[in-house]
Amino acid sequence: MTVFNFSAGPAVLPVPVLLKAQSELLNYQGSGQSVLELSHRSTLFENILQDTEALLRELLQIPDHYHVLFLQGGATLQFSMLPLNLATNQQRVDFIDTGSWSQKAMQDAAAFVKTGIVASSNADNYRSIPAGPIYSDADYLHLTWNNTLEGTTFTDAPQVDVPLVADFSSSILSEPIDVSQFDVIYAGAQKNLGSAGMTLVIIKDELLQRTPDRLGSYLRYDTHAAHHSLYNTPPTYSIYLTKLVLEWIKDQGFDTVVERNHKQSASLYAYLDQSVLFSNHVALPDRSRMNIPFTTGQTDLDKQFLQFAERHHLVNLKGHRSVGGMRASLYNAMPTAGVDALIAILKRFEQGER
Image (cartoon, rainbow, N blue to C red; front, side, top):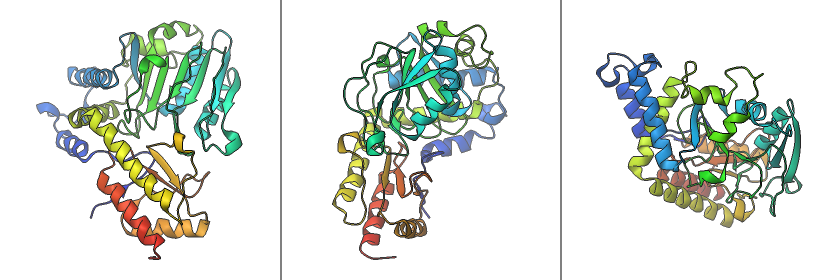
């Protein structure tokens, strides 16, 4: 039985990655130790860490003047670490408000510094990305590149005169990005990078000098940069799985992965756009390729569809509780067969099969 998992995270992982992890679980590289048991101070794990960073730098073309950090606490911890480390001049942070996760980031920042909204798509229920030039004179400007709940995405980085910080949790490595346009990029691993437990932070070297002396050691970016993400025990197994995912992307070819993402999302949107039962309300230029919300417009009918889909082994299609409806997350590891199966089930349901 093949099950297609459309969860927004923790998300589907590539089958070759799971098989490789399984084969190395009990005896990693002839060491007689499980990967789960490796000391983070051992040469074996330090090689894993170095290889993971090297693959990331290669695939994302990260410039040399950026540090790559592997942290814990999920992307949510960054909502606090960012203002504590970086909002040390004006003690103010600006946000582009595009929905739930940008609001959560702003709420946490507000516990430490002043916050402002320089642009918002609240007026159209977050169905688009705010248009027009953006101005900020805060310590940094924060945006959520891909909005997992709302199904929207930025396509261009705003041009501002302050450091630009972006949450790329649900779209990292799904498309090429110019890292040099950002001062900080961060992403939880459990969507496109690997398993829950590790958070990636890519930070420009010069920003490490902003951290105030009063901040505790673990919350300091400069601490983790100075210790190469080994200040304390890092999320070793999550880092290892990220290494395997990055190797898989490289073997596939990053361009191949990006092209597949385009084709798969285009196929699903094409069906939704011609459907008389299902609909997606996101503005066309701002549609996410990773997270595609849709609905029948009727709560009971949405529930019937979710049950119908699950009976046919399509799972985790339920939309977030704050939004409702359905959501298909098409991360890098989602096979084309999964998207084809979803479209087939949508058609059968629309034709009256229950």
